[in-house]
Amino acid sequence: MTAMPRRWVIGRGLFGQAVVRSRGDVPFATTVPWSDGDAATDALRAGLATFVDDAPRGGPLEIIWAAGRAVTSTPRDRVFEEVAVFRGFIDALSELPPDTRSRLTVGLASSVGGAYAASSHPPFTEHTRVAPGSPYGEGKLAMEDALRDGAARGGWHALIGRLTNLYGPGQDMSKGQGLISVLVRAHITGIPASIYVPLDTLRDYVYEDDAANVMSAAALRAAQTAPGTTTIKIIGSGAAVSIGALISELHRLRRRRGRIVLGGGSARGQSLDLRVRSRVWPDLDGLVRTTLPEGLSRVYAAQLSALSLQARAD
Image 1 (cartoon, rainbow, N blue to C red):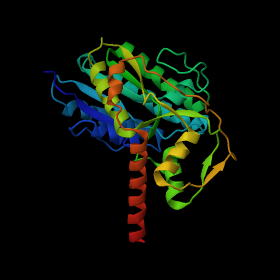
Image 2: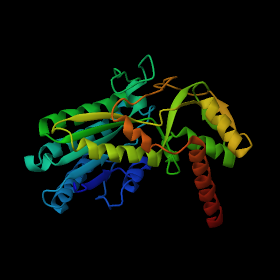
Image 3: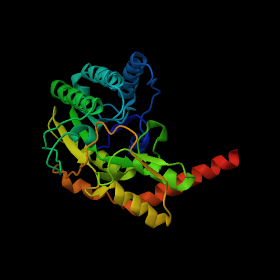
């Protein structure tokens, strides 16, 4: 039986926390001052040394990069500050001894929206030519290139998980993304949800734990590929839903309408149709099991509970 790898999940936001939950182990963790690029790079280098030293001798190693605060509207300089930190981490991996690199798998949480925003002829697959529509997408692809080049030179195994629209109770509302969370908040609080794209815009929504389970399983499989190989895997539900249908589903579940404001902002970098089909390791898509109504209900219950606790505290 193959030993399970020692894991390090970098970034503990919505997706990172879900990746941590995807297995029963306790992954390595270290504090990273993300607001300072140079300090973040230094902290990651120090963390890498500790991670390798504390791992079982000769055993497999796995690192999942789930960090990043950039969104489609983030200015280019801010996006590429994050890219620079990631490139610095790839440089640190390249400096590891050959025997360490050979038992290492590195996974990167990337973005379907970043990769295919300006692509044509959906549904998009791993074989579709990428066409970013914003600096955010350019940054994600630059990180993919850095990982691919580093793996080829360093001889480790690499996985790029291109995620569709991730949602769940752990959404960070301060990032200005997460349409489902924003719509649910409108239902609960009456705070209007602003939508800047047409209601027939198609998106693939995947629940946080389902996406993490696919990423985790794909990372284990990537470890069995030839050294230096990079595998790209689209991670989503495989079912596109229009924003209008999403609003209607929330109305059906909650039996009342949330307040919606249409227009009034920039939809730069947004595609009207982001349908996807994964052609790589499609058997892993069976790990996506949460239906949209079930996921919406979980987000609603989590937000209602959080607001109730806040009201009691006040």
